[in-house]
Length: 324
Ligand SMILES: [Mn+2]
Image 1 (cartoon, rainbow, N blue to C red):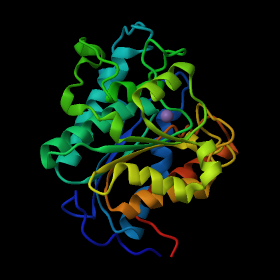
Image 2: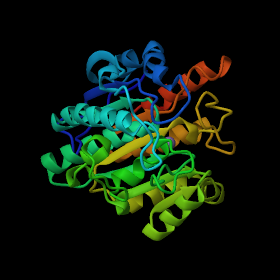
Image 3: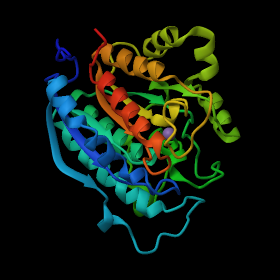
Image 4: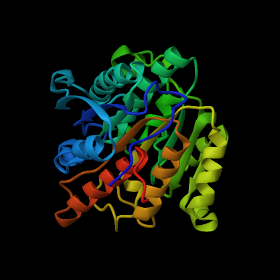
């Protein structure tokens, strides 16, 4: 039994209005199955938990979107990116879906899908908050990977490893069909971005993180200071006057807890550390949007349900569930 979210939010007109977007898209990487995650999360009873246990009023169109009509017949690699037109078109649609909820003052929950969809979710929130509140958003990116490759630094060409470089304006495009739709109103400041749980960073990404002075807490930092101190530092960096978009990649968790994901990396967060990060963000009262991505129920047999359960747990904690 849980108590409903209470108190005022500085950035939302009501603490109980939630917009849900289900994105069944896997084109930002090459493994099939991550598009089935929203259905698996919903079948695990997520909406019931949000409505009945956490007292949210959920606005949901009832669909897991596949955006089939947006996928072009021909989508050759461009600037080393795989399927650039597909990912561009889908993230543009997601951006507009998230924008609509955020502009109406709802807290937005997006179920992925691979992490390329964050190009859509974060750009949608950033634009809505600029218009509604005249403010920039902060982003807490919880992930084993930094996902900040440019098309030129990426070794794989998979766009799920690039969303942050687009969102910070580090990667720009003039081509309307290949992310040229991203305007200044969609972008975030690298100064208001904080990473947690990093442990598998490409060489080019390390250079970018250093050059841009981006705040990043790796697993090494978590081992050294403990997750409590890390969250104090991460949220202290953002400050209490900024709306927060939490983008949570389930591969931040150790494969022991979340094995069914496309790019698992050992040495990650425990389930409790993952929940704790989400609880701390919830406690700020400043959360305005949450992504849960990279659950791939097809990669494991017994591990799939465990990964889905871990995903639901992270979502509940971020949306105000507490142990007591
Ligand atoms: Mn990721």
